[in-house]
Length: 337
Image (cartoon, rainbow, N blue to C red; front, side, top):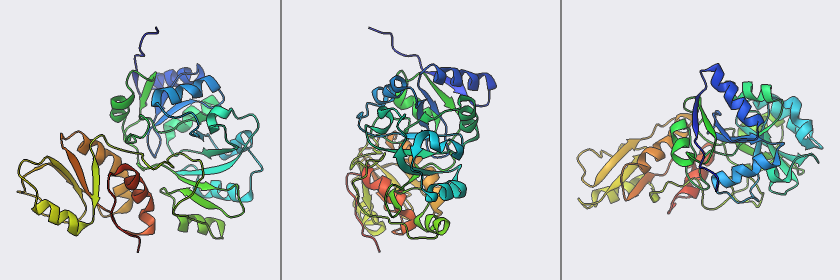
């Protein structure tokens, strides 16, 4: 039996630690790396054995495709074929940044990366440390979120260590993620572009860049990361309520309850018994997204029996927030306006 891994913690501010991360990745090892969205569990995307280690570490089904991170759009032809003009236009508009393009994969791409499918997700991340690593590797890094399968995505190195310590070779600490939510995925393999995962780049922004309509179906069957009914879950059961319903429940809360509350409205929680933790979320959507996973990580560790969370605004620009919460929650209430 092989000895358990000793996960090293590397500092992105130390050049020698970045050197170590590059050496590990070249050797086919797993390194959790910072991106602007969430921390990714990176492996050399051209190394099938290294990619297979991702699924083992995360305990993720091997038929779930991975996103490949590139140093620049000039590498697209190495990973995709039949690249449409729309891909180049979106790359110019949004890369580096939180947008993943779903394209027809190149023949040389290992099937382990795509879950055996004919498409591949590609993006250029907007994190200076990761871009330097990608430049040095002159290749692609497969990098799903650096967490156990279906659990909360990590936006700090501490959260990575909490979930994957002993399962991966290293985590490169680059500080908190600046965006805090997974990338938008747009499918460019059909006649009409369509969003198949909501994210920070909105439909309005995509349509402006393309000069044409972009579909945004409520449901679809595309095989892309995150498209499972249960995902992004804290270990503590999470329940979503509209503001009035949450206010009413809090007023009826029993003194011996142990509830963590995450809210956006002014609920005047001070003095209520049965609440072990509460935090008010910001009104600004980008700030809300940046803080979402970290807030849920903190609430998950508060010793509560349940997390009660107020549903955010029902606006299309918030669909990525609603998507993550709906998959994370035990109950979701609310309808689109």
